[in-house]
Image (cartoon, rainbow, N blue to C red; front, top):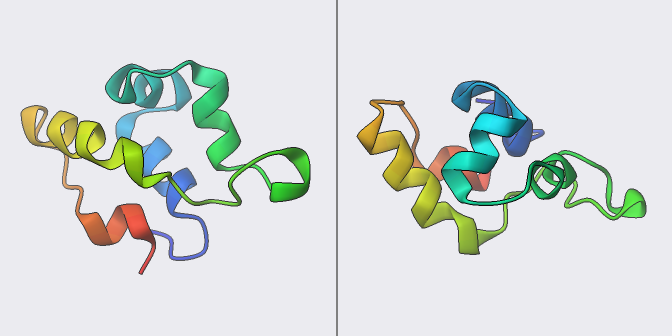
Length: 74
């Protein structure tokens, strides 16, 4: 996983923006903003913590190797 942009790494791991959006129960445009710079109203690579539980649950159900460290970028 990339420590520089954990959002992009998670999006790739889940199979793209749409797949990640389905897993997080979000609109794909919301997931796209995770990888955008702050000046473009993005989160600069961070995934808001409020979505972590859904992403972790989806990863467990689908045998995707995802950890909290991956989500946080630490």
